Amino acid sequence: MPNNVKTYDGTGDAKDHVKIFQAAAQVECWAMPTWCHMFNSTLIGSVGVWFDELPLESINSYKDLKAAFLAYFIQQKKYVKDLVEIYNIKQKDEETIEDFIERFKVETGRMKGAPECMRSSGFMHGVNNPELTKRLNEHVPKTMEEMVITTIAFIRGEAAAASKKKGHTSWRTHDQEITFPPLTTSSGTEGPLVIKVEIGGHMIHRMYVDGGSSMEILYEHYFNRLRPKVKNQMVSATTSLTGFSGETIWPLGQRRLLVTIGDADHSIRAWMDFMIVRSLSPYNGIIGRPRIKEIQAVPSTSHRMLKFPVDGGIVIIHSTILIPGECATVITSSEVSNETGVHHENFKVALHPNFPDQEVAIGGTLSAKGCT
Image (cartoon, rainbow, N blue to C red; front, side):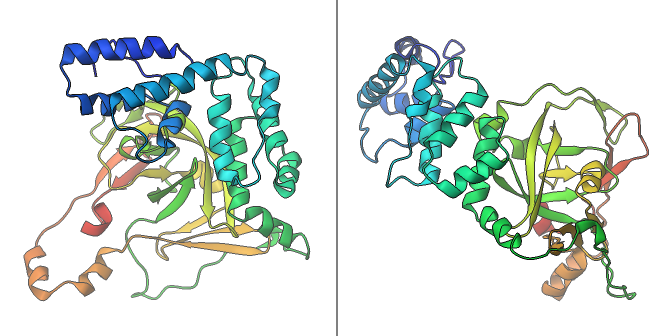
């Protein structure tokens, strides 16, 4: 994309964006189908949502796309000059909560100057589900992002599960003792404790639970797969990392995200500050010691499980990666002979320059399946 063509999030002039894009496309001598694909790549945020929701087969050429784009965004620019109009956005009778969330974000995305508390209040005023409204009023979210996360949690049944638990006496979490069964010489396992968690509304696999790490990490290869709104709120990092060779590595940035561990009925949630790191890794991220302690979780690599208390009992999360010993039972003898003598060394990364003895061993114990 030429440098003079910027992304469009709905806050600028739609005509100017089209004019600049067309001039660049003519200079680049793109074929007409390419115009549509390249124009789509300039649309971000709520504008990208608008494009994704266009009816199937409604756009047959760049001319159609240009006309639809200008008709919608020029009209939207004239509409809702008064921020009070936020309270006129209502959920329709046949509209699902998920669809209303997306429409609400699109319609409020162009309202300059609307504070987050006003957007949250407008959403609560517009949704037509009494139980959801009650849930939101119990702990009013401070931002629209928190509002959406809470609403999605409600949709998945967390509100119903919490409501059910209130009807009987539950155990106090600090009275629960977390224990693990004794291990025999053959029952213990080696290898990492790797789980799947929900981060910022995305289900992420291959998250390494590392009690020796002093911080949380998301690797760039997965961070780039998150929604643009999540990625665009990354801020500058305030500390550096030390590589396994002693070199100083500055993270690409950091991002505070809500993490959910468990399922809809039995889970725990916590806000975590992730360092975004560009590095080759078989994992998508690392959950370190501070947050493990915060959620009162107890990991056991030997048992390949993580346990934490909730109202009513103890949740057990099992590791999701097979260890090499298990993989060896399903390969042929010829494959075993080919692997004989091959030793995959771990590589270590110090997670903080002030604590060089706190290292993470990565890669050596993972199976081929686990590394993909």
